[in-house]
Length: 453
Ligand SMILES: NC(=O)c1ccc[n+]([C@@H]2O[C@H](COP(=O)([O-])OP(=O)(O)OC[C@H]3O[C@@H](n4cnc5c(N)ncnc54)[C@H](O)[C@@H]3O)[C@@H](O)[C@H]2O)c1
Image (cartoon, rainbow, N blue to C red; front, side, top):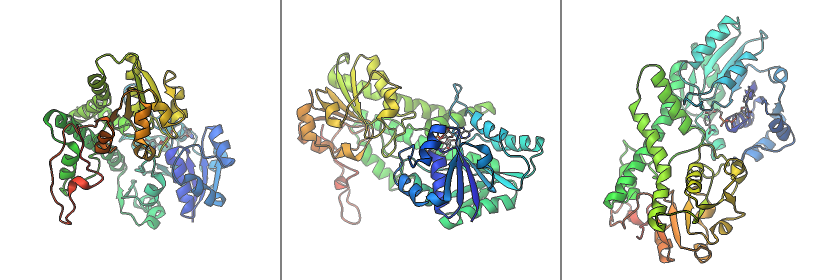
């Protein structure tokens, strides 16, 4: 078993540290955020991630936390860098935290492998290697090992990856880093540093493209009477397409897709190539978040001033408290600009939004948010909203109107309760009754519910 240093204990770093400890390694995790480290030492977990608290407790003996670089680098052949790489105003990736880590690497004291898990533009590894060589840090080898975990299922994703990507110039470095992942029995893609860096960006950009594509299909469905859920199901059964990431909604968000798509677009532009497709993907996503406003105006009248709109969900997706680039922020901002009275609820993300949108009223529970509401907008498909007592909700609301931004509610059931229900790309009742080989009617599967107008 190895001694491992992890730099940065955010969503990726903390999960990486804990999962490597779970695999039997001794891990020292370091962060510059004193409050985070003090909390972790006291057993407090700074982020919400299912199973994380339990896994930290289970591996307590193999995990230590520090703010002291000397302690962090005291031992350990492997140094995992998991610091944030947020977008700059230009849309490029801000690598200042990465470079700050490079500045403070320990001088000659044995062989080390610097493993960058943070998402960085192609060429970053090459630039770091030049800097290390200029400083005479021949004892540090470089490896690009991008992370693909998803918030909300991060531990499962780390321990059961579809693939592990290991990029390094020399085979021994690739093999040593690859060996750390062998217990996970996943395909290990051993490649060059630039290819590893590009695999991460290309993967996220492709997934974002799928989302914007199906959202545009949904928008055309609304004009033409088709139902995007059946369309997506019919498309996804084609093995060349696959069923994933074909869920129409009010746009992608989170700390990865928006910034990574933008960084890849900038990377292409900076190297002289105009990546037209990504420009459209970004624009479609921005417009998609705003389409809810148009729907509310159509249903409530052109004037939203004074209307009470309840937002159900603030996190960019369920099972996380992350609100970075969440659709809720744009939506709430637009509604406030229209003069609407916005009341929001989220099971765990409310604290994170308090400072960002002070004019949004935060409700203690979803029913409180729905009291006297002219419309409810499902922004995040948290299970508790799907299981809401919608009869009670209807009685609390001023008007029984639901805009389902995630196509996750049972529109037919809501219509039976007297709601006006509006999904994304689900404007017309479906008449498709294709039978699956097993005899199940497609219309009866939970992912395909007929929507009443
Ligand atoms: N969040 C995700 O789902 C996800 C998935 C895959 C890849 N990534 C990538 O992983 C990287 C980290 O993302 P995240 O969401 O974990 O970020 P995060 O903001 O949650 O955590 C980053 C942590 O790094 C710390 N940090 C910053 N500078 C530091 C320094 N010089 N020394 C020590 N600690 C420092 C911060 O205090 C913070 O705790 C990003 O590049 C991101 O794009 C994120």
